[in-house]
Each structure stands twice: as structure tokens, then as C-alpha cells.
Length: 263
Image 1 (cartoon, rainbow, N blue to C red):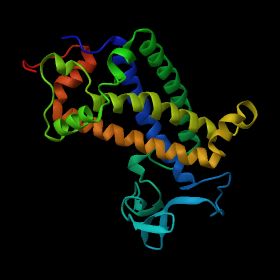
Image 2 (tube, one colour):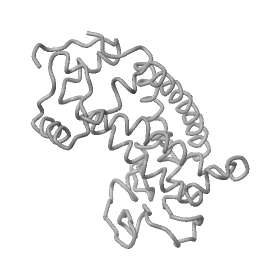
Image 3 (cartoon, one colour):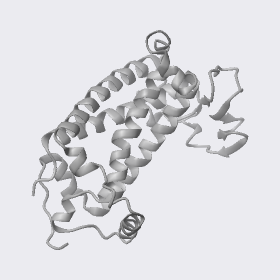
């Protein structure tokens, strides 16, 4: 049965590729100054407003959140480099794009992918609005948002009972909340906070910087939202595996999905 339109499939896969590129290059950029602040300050010597830092304290890798330190040796703060020797770096080389420290190249790729993400997002938003895709399939209705219905869907997911038949072609309320939240809230906020970090915004769109209370606050929001996007992706992939990765992936590639009989 028909599941996804060509516009949804194309923008989905373009978005997936761009998000992977943005995540990898973003981690490389973060490694150049692995600390986050609230407010306008934030330099190599500033600690005012700092709420997160990733680095090494002697022979141990640490993630510092406020006044609390977490030992993350081997993964964050201190990890094996490409040569195999330990290096003091926030995120390991295998998680960044490019894998070595190259701030200039990472920034160029990051900004290029960001503008492509904006264009792809605008195409998806235009299709979703004018085709009725958002109204019919993505945005939950008032009845669906009733606590009893949400609770029932949570129980069904915990029991790994997924819809069958034509019901499998429709998003359930938890899916609608997650997908609409990611597409209509998280990704736009990620783009907006990214613009808020750009020095050029001071002259062209200063309201974007003011909206976040300064570029350092925008950087913190960008980091937090990005981690929420990663969490969404991980849950999305987990549900994909549990519900049937072959048939669901085929549906997002071809637009057609084989459904089991039943309700």
C-alpha cells in the first residue's frame, strides 16, 4: 500500500545525510573551544557563565557540568587519536568530520550543509502545508492528545505491540508528537540558534542574537537542541529496528509498504 509521497521521501533522505554531516562537523568545531556559557561572554580565559566543559584533568578525561565532574576517560576529554596515542580532545576523532582537527574545513562544510538543510526544510514545509500532509498525517488532533489515548499508546510501545493492517500506515500519537516536534520545533530552533552564533547577525539581523541573550547563549541552545535531535534519531532508529527495519526502510525508499492483516 502507498505510504510516503516522493516529496516526503526525497526531503527525508536529504535531511538525513545533511544532519549526519552537520553533527560530525559540529563536533569538530566544538573541539576548538569545548565549553559552553550562558550570556554574552565565553573566551578561553572566561569562566563566568560557564555551565559545561569537556577536557582533561591530568590523566583523566572529564565532562564538567556546573561544579560537578564526570570521569569520561577514553571517550570524552581524553581519547585515543588516529595514531593510537591519547590526546586531549573533547570528542574523539572517529566522531568528527573531518576526523582530524581542521576548524576551517569543518566550518566550511558545516555552513554549506546548514544552508542546504534550510532549503530542504523550506521545501518540506511548503509541501507539508500546501498538500495537507501536516494536517492529515503529522499534527495530532485534540482527541489524540487526551491523556488516556497517550497513555494507551505508551503502554502499546512498551509492550512492543505495533499496529497492523491499514492502521500501520498512519502515525500514532507518540509518533506524531515526536515527528512534528522534531520537524517543526527542534530543527527550526537549531537553525535559528545557529544563525544567532554568527557574528554577521550583529549587523544584519541583531534581533536573532538578542533573542538568545547573546551569541554564547545561542551556542548553548544550539548544543542542547542538537543533543535532543540526536536523542530523537536514536529513538527513531530503535523503533525502526523493533517494528521491522526492512519493510519500513523500503517504504521510505519506494513509497510502498507491505502491511500485515489485522488491526
